[in-house]
Length: 350
Image 1 (tube, one colour):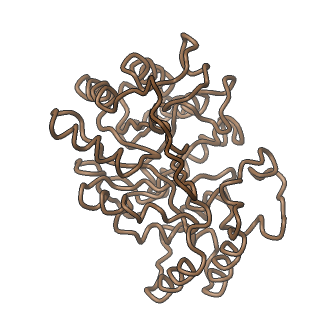
Image 2: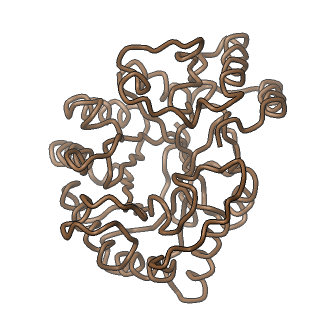
């Protein structure tokens, strides 16, 4: 498993990161622990979670994923062997995240409450990477890119990035957080954080966690240059486009126990033109003698701005395939064919 530097830090992380958002919903605690064991045994030292997990989010399950990881850390006594990342929720009208019942904002009091709860859930004194899950701005949710810009007006109670960054920097100084990162952020937002870090002497973001897959390469427009020039590496999530790039949903198929069958949450990857693009990538993988899932994960690993690709699984068989993708080497000719399909189909699921 390749090891790559996390931003400008001295931390080396595996090129595959295990995402855990299914722990506590689609996966039991025992299954989650088995996944963590397998991943660590096969070279993965980087684990990502969030205060809102598992997905789909709810007040009844919120924090359950962190608690499952915390139980694993306590049982295995291996905290020093892993790089642990979690996230604080961004702007939301949900009222179950905070004890006060108020809507979520990235203010100093709320960030402090969130980190204390996460540390308690995870049964650790610190997290290596603390990420802003999504902005406290009226922007498209979870990094999605609308087909047309609709000029969203700033909310009257929008928390300034300066306040958020100052609060995060306090946590770094106190040792509760080693480094901070962004998620579902724009080029403007990322550069604003970086400028404030430089001018105000605050903590500097070391990473950005945004969607990146063969159906959504919008990161390459604007953010890729920011990532490379500023050493804010991408932690690319949804490399399988929520499983669609495996081909398992083609022609209306609905596998039992799949996310679509359980929750019907795949709309981002069901837009016009998506099925044709998915079919083309699946056929390319098969013609090259590569598992479609492994092609979908191996391709992001070839990107110069990619620090780690975040994978997720609900079965050990899926996990083995996903981690095995780290050993799949794509020829320049095959990458050219992927780029040609991208030229033909574009970003069908931004």
